[in-house]
Length: 120
Image 1 (cartoon, helix red, strand yellow):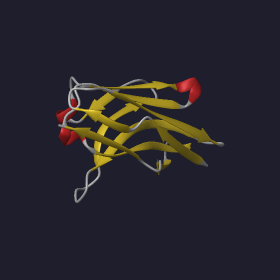
Image 2 (cartoon, helix red, strand yellow):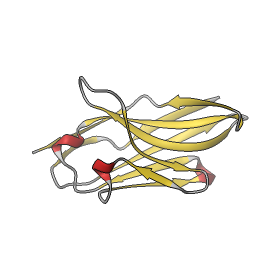
Image 3 (cartoon, rainbow, N blue to C red):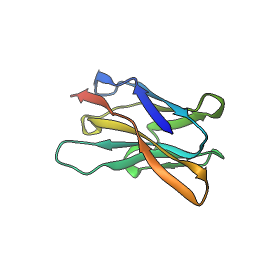
Image 4 (spheres, helix red, strand yellow):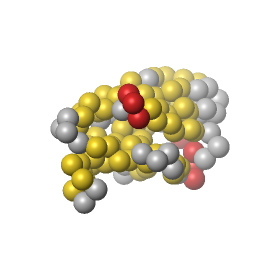
């Protein structure tokens, strides 16, 4: 009932910027929270940033002040503006949506992932 398609990854030099986009296709469900997670080789998948339907945001400490998450509710799209990128930001970035027919019946949905590589 929810499909997520990411775009915007790529290769960038340290100090550069990238903007990730994720479009959600939804049938009969509401989307409550959308966010971005990332997973580097050999590491667990961690939260980067999230945004609720009301606009409240959460960021990992490692990206505060450098990344900004935003959301277009009308388009079911979430963005991640990444500035001052560092080599340690290199990872596969996954879009996430918390969605369901009601607030008491929610499930996590994931995109296919987009590679972000930051060269030093």
